[in-house]
Length: 246
Image 1 (spheres, rainbow, N blue to C red):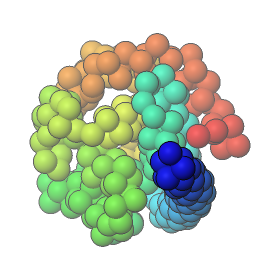
Image 2: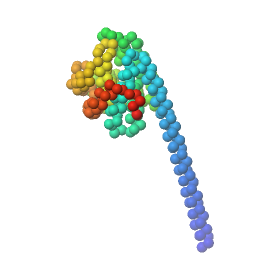
Image 3: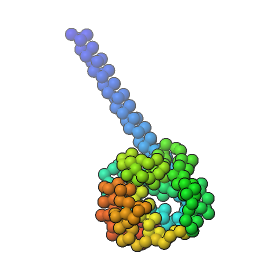
Image 4: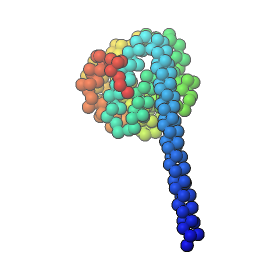
């Protein structure tokens, strides 16, 4: 009987010891997880900071580009806020939208600012800015940024470039930036054209004008954009960098 009690007592102590070890191990795992999360956030912030620095390069490279870059971000944020996607993903889309034209730093400035009509060869060279983005955005952490830069000229109906992707083959982030980039391009003065009014830009995007067609856009995202029309007009008139929260 005593031997049995000793065995039970020893077994109880062993189990208690193992439970303590497991609890200590779990506590350490939680500590390590917290450390990893903090390091991951620091790393993500470092990439966001680097992206911001890259965006300033684009701003200074082409005339009137700075306003376009930040309007793109502000308008992207309006759409992204309406989407049911993870917050981290939202933040990446908004932050990296400023790099959509980063590949243009490899295009001659004289070509980007040419006041007259581009030749076929010149237009083909400008189209390569999407591909050139891969020279800078190679790190896996820049996947969303690269998707935006590489695919924001793809059309939902498959008529875009550089690959002629269709529908959901185009990453969500690129489909979003496609809409705001086209809108702002229509509104903006360029060396080769005058900008149009908000109403005209919306009409072109919803009815088409031969070059821009409604079939170029993700219909669900376009509907979200249209539902934000008053906010879009206000943001276009008063893009406030400090008001961007994501």
